[in-house]
Amino acid sequence: MIIDGKQIAAKVRGEVAQAVKGLVAKGLQPGLTVVRVGEDPASAIYVRGKRKDCEEVGIRSDEHHLPATTTQAELMALVARLNADPKVHGILVQLPLPKQLDERQVLDAIDPRKDADGFHPFNVGALSIGIPGTPRPCTPAGVMRMIDEAKVDPKGKRAIVVGRSNIVGKPMAMMLLERHATVTIAHSRTQDLAGEVARADIVVAAIGKPELVKGAWIKPGAVVIDVGMNRLADGRLVGDVEYAEAARRASAITPVPGGVGPMTRAMLLVNTLDLARRAR
Ligand code: NDP
Image (cartoon, rainbow, N blue to C red; front, side):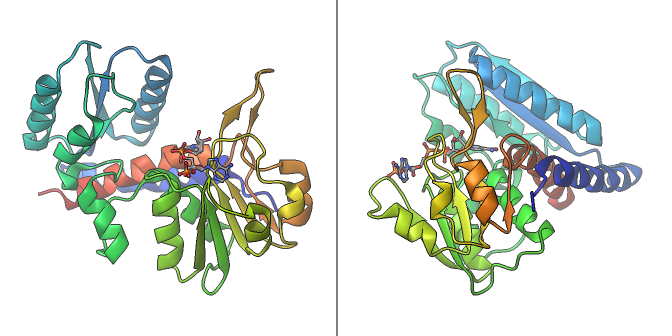
């Protein structure tokens, strides 16, 4: 089975649009504010996409686009203003920031109750110790929704997450653990990655290396989630998993493109909606 991220993301957007309508009827217009600094072309594209998604579901979106020469103090002042603005329910600072800016300090300054990306240390801790109702990083949250839609119950299963970044690998592992999987986290120093992957019932690859996970490693019947997005020299977009062979062995697999990518975008809308609902 192919787990169709585009289709599930459309379903999620439909649910959000419905819920937004309900809030607007009660006089609450959910709003996401995106902060972009400098002229990174990929960031411009991502922000445009996020704002278009908001528009489609009825979430108000604003963008603060600051020059590449912005100082730390200026950016911190903007975050403080947005924290204090009751119309702003979600704040998202698009990364990467220009070199002179301290990303961690900026992310830490966002009010955790407005943290649309779920990257604030409070929310990271909340996920880790199981405080409910806090925003969660969009990519792993999207993966969990895909696993649920595929009717896969992680409980008791062996799961491996390849990659330990703060935005994907680590929160992914926490979410699978929360759902009672037996979780292994693999990374660049893991010995015998092939052997570790071969034992897993659920494989999540979040590495950023084209087709590093070989199809032949996949245990027959395993569920394979490919987070990777790698642009090859010939322009093709491929994941971190060798798709064709993995698809032959897996019971369910996500394609690239059209898998995790659309889900990440959709979960940002879910986070913004939830932040608006809890705002007071
Ligand atoms: P990072 O570069 O932050 O992390 C990559 C991880 O992979 C690191 O933990 C690294 O280990 C590990 N790794 C690198 N090489 C190997 C190896 N040979 N064997 C095992 N592990 C290895 O990447 P991100 O987590 O930000 O992103 C991962 C991928 O997912 C990228 O392709 C990115 O484009 C994609 N992505 C896709 C999204 C989507 O919506 N579809 C959203 C976010 C990311 P170590 O820690 O030891 O260095």
